[in-house]
Image 1: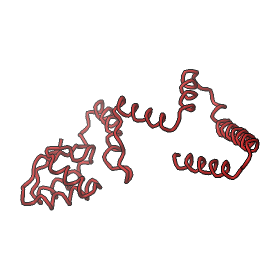
Image 2: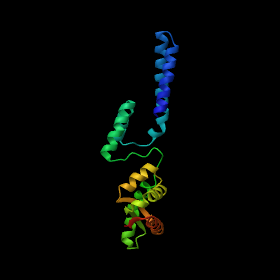
Image 3: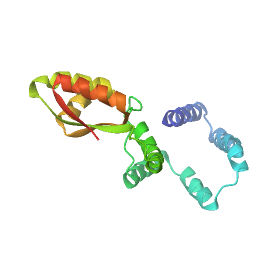
Image 4: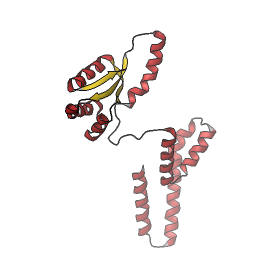
Length: 186
């Protein structure tokens, strides 16, 4: 979004530099405002068709009037207040998605009193001599960069993976124990 805003600003600046008289500038400025309003109106027609809570509509109107810097401040304030972590630049990691599904499965498993099928793996400790091998394995398991994997392993004990099926968890524990790590299944 910031790229399109910057592009629009550059186009406007070029257009304003190209015009030489102030009357032409005034006409082009009003024309751009009309086009902007028309585009904004056209883009929100579908959203306006659905019934919207008046409180939400007021907040949306206030947010739409913010500048780009004010919007960035708003986003950072909301992230800190709501404890929303920053996502890695490379994309989504495999960790957060299974965690969201865990409470639903836990609620279903409680009434049925069935055997636990999903486990959390925790890296407790490791042998100093096998540290490089464990870092590489953690890198492969979690999809982290080499530096992130090194920091992860050095900060043991730490939760390795959450909501892992029993068979997969046992394979991971076996692999890491073979490399010299101590992993627990909770």
